Image: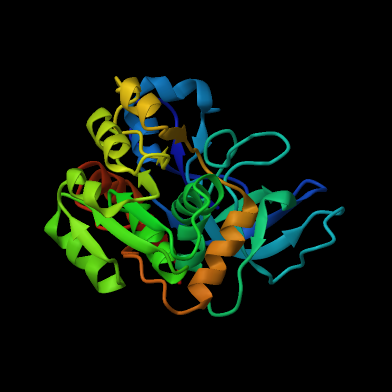
Length: 316
């Protein structure tokens, strides 16, 4: 099989040929049909701080979907031919595919069965792959950490690859959604989806009595402004990692009883729930596609900010 192998920081991915994987007793092998391109992969390629989290050499690609072609001896819940998405992190070992073991930038991938999520009829492989990271990492902060409910006023900061999912799902769930993005095109997209309003400035949320704000940008300015814009007693969930060290106005948090919490990733159950949203036919995040042969070029486009939505390498 072929795969795009990472060897070291600032070294280009190399297309390699290696033996087809065989499943361990508790694993399956999937023919990869779609794999999402993530800013994490851009970071892995260029930032040495990622190296402790990577077992190089390794084939990247931590968000993927495909069809099972081999089944390990102890796997009872899945069979050859099943369509599945793959939850990035193993719930028992903590290992992430595409980081600690070969991932989805490949023809095939061996995956522990406890990371599989059945892909329902009517949900494409492209949608299936997008839900395993972008979808999951939007669903969890919104509905699990943020406890969004119908009728709740929700602010979404950053309408990109993750923010589009959050806006879509919150609107479908019956929340009153207020979107914030500096790009006019992102605001126009949000308005088409059905938000109450779309703003260029976080400060415009202040008059809306917002219960919950999800910050998908994650800069000190966006997080501070979100904490000031949410209503007294409200919650701000930080997902974006635009900057890793911020100075927060703790006086505002204390005097207004604002809850500030971070959120990373999610669970296989979250992915399954995102698939249910796709099944409604009302989920329309931007999912541009490229080919597997052009994954390196796609990552360059992602790094340059040229990608709208979530870019997926597809064999559909």
